[in-house]
Image (cartoon, rainbow, N blue to C red; front, side):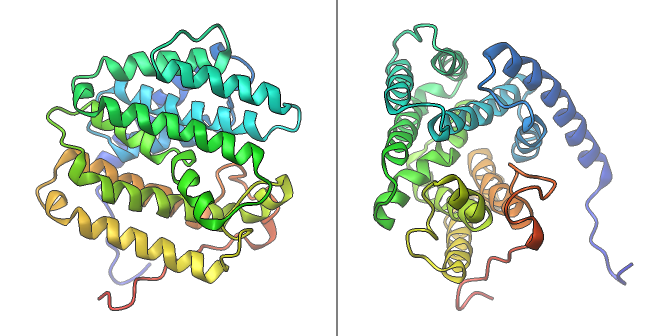
Length: 299
């Protein structure tokens, strides 16, 4: 044991883990009711993320948050599935975009689940402050999914413009903001962009071998070196923290949730690809922690 070991207090950690267990059970039942396209094997990681990112929020909000991760993964799997032809993918995405605009789901499972999430988010007290932003985040995610479905190659700039939305961070974080009162999202948007880019690139760094085997787009496939990706993650994390410094100092909930999302998303990819948490994926032979270097000049 080290001479000094800065262990966190165990009581809140236990409480958060209990919340995660409750969320996992609820999410498992919800996903099962939505249909086979919704992944049950990732239930625990979705529950853990929601429990730890914003542990002060009420359980119904955290249930909604974990369902968002499940939905994002389900639509990503659908778009990437070799069993789905382009016409099917286009129809699913078109139906989901109609739901974002306020329309009916038409019975399609992904659109139906999104309509339920949409209505839950819209009923939250802070939704009027973030409604246009949330609709835009979800719509951009869907547009990005269409781009990725049609593009075997592309430019790095084009990929990142879409992939910072398809990674799900904007949709997820803005939904959390909707649960908070008197949120002014505009000053937080540059930090939200930093967080989304950081998590996307961390995902790419960890999942590159899997995504290459699946034929998916990835920043490394489009020309960035692994070392450059690692440095960019560190840069964006530092920028996110710097932009939020004053709000974090006063424990402003929207900023705290955003920063914790950035840390959670990049930290988990330092250690695992949650698609293969036991190291069963293409990179299982070299699943070592990935470090995000601090920006030059950082102390």
